[in-house]
Every structure is written in C-alpha cells, then in structure tokens.
Length: 309
Image 1 (cartoon, rainbow, N blue to C red):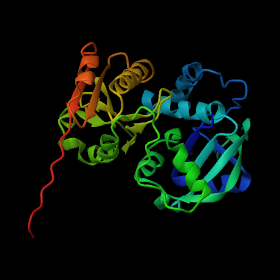
Image 2 (image 1 turned 120 degrees about the vertical axis):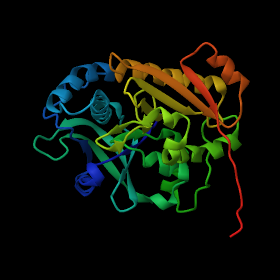
Image 3 (image 1 turned 90 degrees about the vertical axis):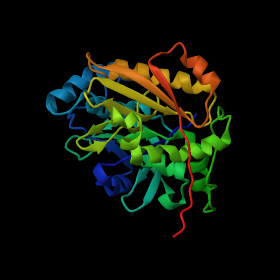
Image 4 (image 1 turned 30 degrees about the vertical axis):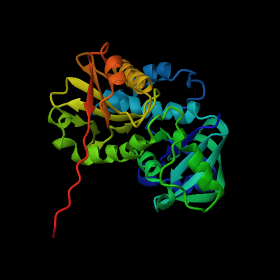
C-alpha cells in the first residue's frame, strides 16, 4: 500500500532546489559513511548501533534528539518504499510531490549524502490549498513524518485544482465526526495555551535546542500528539487526543506510544505516563483505563462569550 510522507530537504528547505533539479531526496545528520550494508530491516537494531555513534559526535544532544535523527535517517534510507509519495516544502509556500523510484545510495561529500531517487511530479501543492488538518501535519517539527492518513486529500490535490473540503474524515475508526472536527483545532490551542492548562503546571512540551519538537512527535510507532516532560525532568508524558475515535483504539494507541517512549527515549531514571483528552466523559475509555493507572483521562470544555464593544 502506498504511503505518504512530509520530508524537509535541509533546514528551512535549504537544499530543496538542489534535490528538485537532481531528482533525489536526502539527509545528512553528520553520519559520514555509506550505510548500504547497515540499513537493517528493523529500525530498532539500526538505532541501537547508530544512536551511540550520533551521541559521540554530538555530546550536547539528548537521547530524544539522537533517536529522532537516526530514526529519520533509517526511514529515508530504508523505511520508504518505491512508489511512496513524499511532499517536500520548497521554502516559498509550495510543496513538491515526488514518487520514490530507487533504493538508498551514498553521495560522499554532498550536502545530503544519504539519498533516494525520486521522480518529481509535475504539480506542486500550495499550502493554502490544504485543509487545516493537513497543514498541521505537514507543518510538524522534524525531518520526516508519516502523513498517510491524509492520502485521499493529497491525491485529490494532485489531481485537480478544485477546493478540498475543510474536513476529511478518512480514518475508519472515527465514530464521532463532530468531536473529530472540533479536536483537530484542540492540538493547536493546547500548543499556544499549554502553560495555562492543568498539565502545563507540571509538564512542558518537549524541546530541543529551544525548538518545540514534542508536537506531532514522529516515532516508528506512529506520531504522538504531544510529548511532554516534567519540569524536574523525571517524568515523560504522552498526550493523545481522542479525536472522536473508538475508545479501545485510542487507549491502545496511547499505551503503544508509551511503550515506545519507555523503550527508546526515556532515560533509566525517567518514568512514562499517559493522558487522553476527549470532548465528553466516556465510560468506555474510563473502563479501559481502570487497568492502566499511569494513564489519566481529561475532558475539555468549550466556552463561548460575546462581549459588547
């Protein structure tokens, strides 16, 4: 099955033009060796080998940053399949779409030496033409992120210039489209107002080099809505928005992400907790969480008030 990814071609798309002209995508991360025989089928074994190498060359970086860098490098070199579609911003508000056509190769001395061949499609996608949900996904922090949930919208944008509906519910486990529509704005609200929330009193959204990387935090288990860390750096928090989905699905997903964070990100002295946020009190979610004491449930309220000027 075809997958879709948003990929940055250098910081602030610095090497986008070079990639468009040369028919390739690539990455660097200052790992200067040919990985042709080292891109294992399992990303975990790749990270086990290369996270220490990355940290040795970047002693100021955290395990989170190292895991992100090596995970992105593995995804670009091995995780992408031929036929997958990448959307790459050009730095001017447009996204070039390309189809992956070849395997990994190494271009020693190049800006982006770890490469894949790509057939760039003739049509660009304007960011303004995307739904808000797709804009949020393509604007997430990180080198590469899986945006396959928006595949139908992306295909529609590539086929026609017709406007795309504001809300596209393509997830088969959505049981409440109204909550889905509202909660696609909730993440942006939380990002702006995090410090004023109950969670914000104890946790901060994860940052690296002063940049928030904890929003739509990309992992091989899937994108975490929000990854936060306690102010004493001892607790990591996985936050998932229910987004109108079936209770069992969102609880299982939160636990899966927590397992990933515990295994691949947390330091030995750090614990991992979870939080699920939903529009309405949900007995099914509460029942599921009764056996998961390290996951909290929060309900949010929306208040609307008109003030005469």
